[in-house]
Each structure stands twice: as C-alpha cells, then as structure tokens.
Length: 481
Image 1 (cartoon, rainbow, N blue to C red):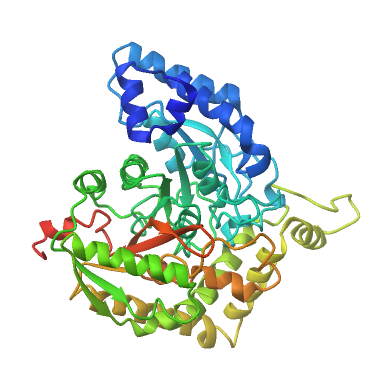
Image 2 (cartoon, rainbow, N blue to C red):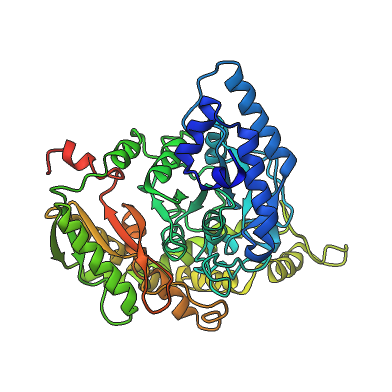
C-alpha cells in the first residue's frame, strides 16, 4: 500500500491489513510519522514524539505476527496518547510547566492496555493544562490548531488528540472527559468521541483533575474505530477504587449492527434554543429527522435541573482540583523554584506554584479552595452536590420513558483562537451540553452530523445513555425495547 492508502484506512481496516500481511506495523507507523513531520508545524497536536521508540514497538508487533501469535484487532495500529496518562518511556506533563519533562516510573492502566493490544504509541498529545479548558489554549506549551481551519480551536481539553486524528496524524487517540473534554473536541473537529460510563475505564495513572468526574475514552474517525479502542483499554481495574467490576458493554457489536429501529429517543428541551448557533440547530434537527426515518421513536423530554448543571459543575470540579493539585508542592516531583538555601519550604512551594501553574489552573484552585473553606462548604460545594443529585434524578426519570437522549454536542462550531480567552464564562459555555452526563456518571457519544452552513465547520450530535449502557443495544437485551 502507498502511504496515502495507509493514512486513509480506518483503524479497523488497518488492523486487518497488518494481521493478514497486506501491510506491516512498521509501514503503518512510518506513514503516520512522516505525515506528522509534514503537518505538525502547523497543527501542534503533539507535545512529545519519539520516532525510534514507535518504530521499535511496530517491529515488535510484526515479529509477534510472524511468529504466529494471535493478536487483537488493533495490533499494529498507531495511536496518539493524551499527555495526562503516565508513560515510562515518554515524559508526562499534563500540559503544565510544573511537570515539564517529568518522567513517570509507571504506566497508567490505559497505557498498559494499549501496549497489551499491540498498538503503537506515536507520542503524547497537547492538552489544556491539567485538562482545565475547552480550547487547548491553556497548554503551557502553546495552543493546538483545528485542522479544518488553523485559525480556530480544536476543542479541549483533549484538543491535541482530536487535532491529531482530524489531521491524519493518527488513526486513533485517547482522551479524558471531565465535563465534555472528549465529546466537545470531537464535535468541533468532525470526529467520533465517546465518554464511557464513569468507572468503566480506569483512572489509575491518569493525572487527576476532578476525581469524581474524570473518564478516559476514545477519539476516532468513525464509530467502529472508537468502539474498538474503547473495548481495548476499558474494563475493571483493581488498582482503581472507582472502577466498575462489570464486563465492558459490547460496544463493538453495537457499532457493527448500527441499528436504531425501535429505539426511543428523547430530545432534551433544555439543551437547545437561545444561544445556540443556527447552523448547529439546523444540523441537529436534520439528525433527529434522520433517526426517525430509520425507525427511531422521537419524543421531547424535559430535564429541568440541566439548567443548573453548569453552575454546579464549576463548583464541584474546581473543589476537587483544589484538593488534587495540592500534591504539586515542589517537594516531591516536578518544578522547584527558589530553592537556593535561603528560603523555607513554604516560600519555595509558593514560588513554584506561582510560576508553574497557568492562569486557568490558578483560577480554578482559588475558586475550589474558597468553595471548600469553613463557612462556605454547605452554601457552595454542598449545594452543588445536591444539584448533582437532581441532575441524576432527571436522567433516571427520562430513561424510564426513552432509551437515549440527544442534543447538540456543543452550542457552536469551533471558535477563533483568542476569541474567548478573556471571557471565562463564554469559554465555560462550550461545555453546556456535555456537563450533565459527567455529573450523573452516564455514558455519552458525539458523532459528526454535518457542517454548519454559515461557516462550513463540523457539528456534533450528542447521544446520552444510562450507566453501563455504552453499547445502547444492551437496552434491547434488557427487554426495554
């Protein structure tokens, strides 16, 4: 195959070609590494690349295949890995200066499972610092650009991963979703992005932002590829106390069936209307009509507490980030500033955190610390957790009458780089549609649904399902259809 042929194949097709000897893992890796060398200067999707290590991984896969070893469907397929997962052979920075060049002594569970699946890790992708952002402009190492329009954002926090897949710098990528950080970048880059059920994919070795919300998931160019990656790295992990001890839902089977006949679909009334870009609304409505034409039964559903989900999230997530980021104290690892023997530990810690954290991380630490402080805990954090319960109840009530809920993935298409950096509230509104699912811990998926007429940029359709119903067809097995 030519390099162009290899780049244009789906991950499923590429895995099949490697397994049958139509191509090799080395040829596939070389094609993608050459593509990265060609376009990375414009896109800036990666923070760390190691061509020799990637090719060595690929050679190892080819040797195992030549020896007759049975490997999985993604063996030999390259993958871009978000720089929030620890890796023993590459730095892990979480997009922050405070961890610049830090090398982990262990692999994250997701990393381990990628290696066990025989996948070739090309490098670590750029991200908003500690996954805090919706545009990948908060990275300490520079912004990533959207391959559809280099003057626009690729979404965030997994923007490096989405840009890598959209620019054909990788066929697959990992991401993490705390408030929409897989689905939103997938939507604005014209890709498929899945947020598994909370606890369905391991957080062990994932640098924590908000522990009750963070969820690893896949980014791909089609649903089957996303399902294959989801299945490859998900499942119970005894090292993660929040891991669900249950089988991975049959997402690959569901993707291959692609059947929505008889599916009860609820359109969420609160996730649309004023503030949504007309082209986004138009493509969403067309998608709903398409689902109806394929045999789905569509009704409108009201989830009143969703109106308060954004406010609740921006109390819960900063509170948890304030706690999690306390470990970056200049004493144990990472950056250390001012340790010249003339300063005490507290001053060194203060100088290090001041220089090592970016403005958005500082903003959220301050907000979270205030919300958790004596006298304010019940009024802010406690109240936000009560709203979280109401959001979950709204989901549960809706799923009594429908099987899935749908909405636009994000209210607008990709906005211009720099457009919202001075307006945090406008930036936070990019996650308006995705946050409720994170608060409830349910599964959700964003799929492309066309281009907005006014700017020609991708629009995403969000599909939300109950917890542990990541496959959607699992509902039929339960007799609910």
